[in-house]
Length: 188
Image 1 (cartoon, rainbow, N blue to C red):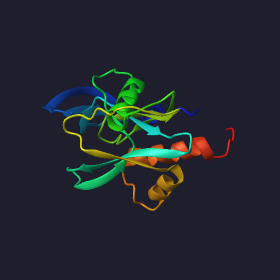
Image 2 (image 1 turned 90 degrees about the vertical axis):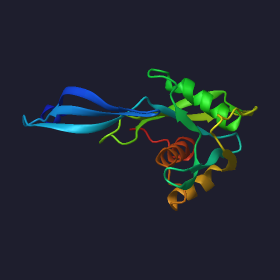
Image 3 (image 1 turned 135 degrees about the vertical axis):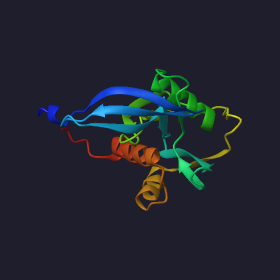
């Protein structure tokens, strides 16, 4: 591994300038590698989890919902924010899977930790593949209005590749699940 020390900045201090319901915003005072100082604006997010549920017939379960901030009717993998900083991503993934779809799984395999926008946000989404699915009752939050959409995983891949699925966590999750379940088993 190469020595990347010449790329690293040092955080000098941080002050919260806004406390919100979902995010906080801070000014982060940084010393750059060349010694100069600057201030970054950072969105502080406690994190989230997302789950790609795929059944034994190779169907994926997605949720369709309106995202008012973007004014977008969006097709997404089930996901939600952590209840508290430090909550295990896997626990959040299990909860969100059942709450949003009514599904439970026998296996929940970690795919990756997705860093959503590292230039200004601390959000990390733990991404999981759920298999061995069984249907139970869902438990939507009071502010959730969603439809569960079941389709072949191959169709979801096509929706990603044609730009019809635009949500970044869903794009990553669908493609990673496809690769995991159908891609070449090459070793690196």
